[in-house]
Structure formats: C-alpha cells, structure tokens
Image 1 (tube, rainbow, N blue to C red):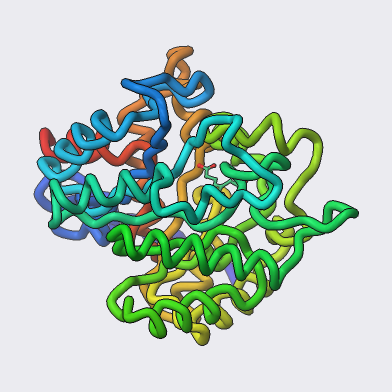
Image 2: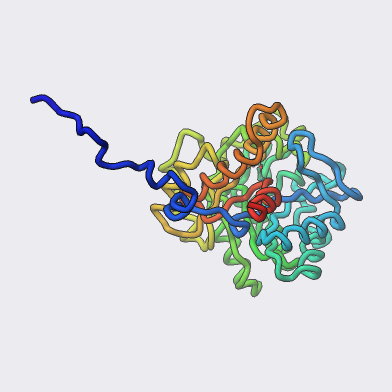
Length: 334
Ligand code: PBG
C-alpha cells in the first residue's frame, strides 16, 4: 500500500511559536528569583578576594557578605548558602574549628540573622575546608573516612550552626546515617524548626575542582579522591536509594549534585518522591560557562538563563547557583 502524503500538515506546532503572546501562553516553566540559592565563600581576611577559577566570584569578609546579602534581599533571592574559608594554619586533622562557636560560619550567620532576619541562611556541614587532609570527614591511619566518628563531628558542627541562627543545614559529607543522627540531635536540643536540605545524591565529580580552590582544600586533598563516600557517576538507582534514606531520616529537602550533567537524576528523584528537590549547579559548571563566554564562544546571559531553566524543566524546585544575583538581575530587567 502506498502512503499518500497529506497535501497540508494536519498539525502545525509552529502556529503557537509564531508570536510572543502565544509562546508565553504555552510556556510550561518559568524562572524567578525565588528559585535561587546563592553559595558564598566567607573568609577571615578583610575585604574581598577573587577566586581565579570562578570569574565573578569572590571570597568575602563578613562586612562584604552583608553587602551581598542586601543585594540578594533586594533582588528577591531567598537564601544565601555559607561556605567557610578558614586561615590555613587553623586547619587540623580533626577540623575542630568547624564547630567552634566563634568560627567563620557561626560569626557570619549571627551577623546575617541580626541584620537581615528575613533572609534565609543556609550552611554546609562537612569538614573539608577545616581539615589538613581536605577530606570531608575524619580519617583512620589508612586514610579511610570513618563513618561514625565523622557523624559525631558533624553533629557538633550542625548544632553550632543552628545555635548561630542558620535556618537550613545542608550536610554535604555523604556519611551513612548522618541525616537521622543530626535530626535527632536538633530535636533533642530544641532546634525543631531548623530545616535540613541533604546532599542526598552527591557524586564523586570532577566538576568540584574550582570550589576546592575557593575554600582552599584543593592542595590539602592533593591526589586523593572522595570515591569511598561520594557516589559513582555511573549510577542512578543508587541515587534513589540515597534519597529514600535521607527522607526517612528526616530531611525536609533533598539535593542532587552536580547539576546539568545529572538532570536525569533530578527527574527520577522528583518523579519518585515528589519532595522539595534541588540541584547544585557546581563550580565547574559555572567555570565552563564563564570561560566559553570570555572567549566569545557563547552568549553568557542566554546560556546562563537557559541552563537555569533546564533545572526547572527537569523537576527541580530550585537551584544552588553562583549566577543567582546575575540571573535575578537579568530576570528583573526582561
Ligand atoms: C564540601 C562541598 C563541596 C562542594 C560543596 N560542598 C566539595 C566537595 O565535595 O569536594 C562543591 C561545590 C561546587 O563545586 O560548587 N563537601
């Protein structure tokens, strides 16, 4: 039998794409400043210091952090995520300044919450910026990361952050059982409102390179890796298992990290659990966009917004992104 082509197409998807009004009418996803969490690096020095591998990103003193917080509030970005950059000689094998109530994160959180109480403050729980070996946890004589001992340290870090006013804890260490242990400790100490966004599916990724330079852990980590606790990039069923455990242990929100190369994981997590799901557009993803744009090979602003929108399409409720202020500014002007 011969198939006779219809003289005219029966459906013309291009009709809806013809004009801006109909494109807007059928748009499935939109990006707003509400979708963003801005990660910030807070150091012990005065003023600002650029992060060479992340053009446009700077390490900030607490005074400078307050200025950035004011911009975030003004642009409608709901949350700042704090990462500490301690002085190199303050690092120890056990990373104990991580739970010092006068540590950099604790002081930064107190300053932010007293000046801008309405701004959400989030912080990272892991020991890597604070340890001499650059690993996220405590190590034994073979260099293996000790699960239970690390959780004890993370509990101290978490309680110290919560006491300083942090609204959202985000354990990024990938130890087994840490969400449940931290949640129990928070409840016991009366921090019943402190939210947890778990780094539930965090991969052992090469995309974290620029971040490790930013917090000053790259040289300490040297040639070691994090493959005994962060996930294998080859897996996604395992991600669902990790997310299920963290939800059962009391996480309020879950995160997939890195972002763009792992959108399939974001989609699977959102479909399987329907919980508040976030993705981290990490330092290496940011650096790639910046480098290509600086060479004039891509349109910076267009790629930035398209990549952020892709997270929404994949099912993310929000994105941790170093572009947060730039994107919010651009969205406001368009
Ligand atoms: C600390 C931590 C890392 C990142 C966030 N928290 C680095 C790592 O796990 O080695 C990476 C963020 C980024 O690359 O932007 N555990």
